Length: 390
View 1 (cartoon, rainbow, N blue to C red):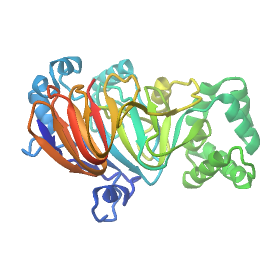
View 2: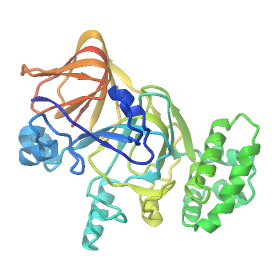
View 3: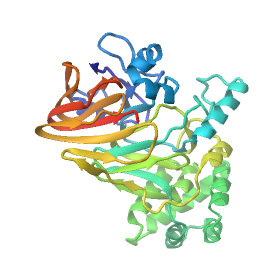
View 4: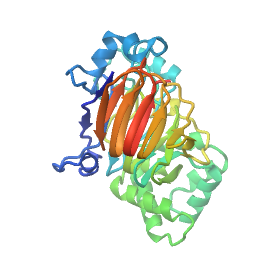
């Protein structure tokens, strides 16, 4: 089976009204288009040419569609979800649980009788949500805790009134205490701190932290009473160039700020939020899943593994991601379980060894290959991502 997919676009408020339409080559309609989903998540599954959803197909015939080994490993659930993500405004400060935390959290919410579609439910399913974001254009994000000495230097350079206590806590290595304290504060207590930070950013004239200060000043203006602005003080400010990436395992605190990227994650909707959002926030639960170990270098670079093929090596058990750059030649990507091929530039024809079926795809389109299919054959000109179940 080599089947072209019809995919759902999610219209979250932070989405860009132009980026996904531009990728698809269609006129924008003025509404925010945040994410284009490719996969078998039950809330917005891709649809096959037959009209059957990929979720229903996998549920009915898991071994035949995923392959016996993948179906057994993931209890018949499609293991990953791929997206085109287009952010015009910041997403929430958030983190995702480990497999053990997801199972336990899901059990608690089920036992408490919280409806699975409730806005205040923390765990929508029993899966973790490690993810990778690969930039399709310059992409800005906050990713992982900055090394403490650098954050102390930033705070000292800003010299913002009211943040002396935070600086002292970080000097003492009390990152978790500091984070928990201000994230648990009410908005009346946060508002003067954010205002002081905004004022300090406006008068900063240095160069060492120019990018960080510009981001903090903008967040302080847009979210004047939100503790997520103070969380942003502690996180690495990252600018990804095209095809650079960040990998976000369980516990990594992050927030995407602006840009368009290709995102792959385990097939889960478990998000624990802490700020920069009007959605449900549960600070104790968020803190319980966070990894407070500082992250010196969040950027993950792909590695060329064969002519035209770049692998993004995360070690994640739920998915493997390879980028294929085509200049008119054919490229063969070895078989590795059920696959989604997503084209992000140009025109690419997708086939598989052992079948005569092919699909011609243009930018923004994707195709599905069953797990038992042979190697994936790509030809044409452009760039495609091949995401496979391990």
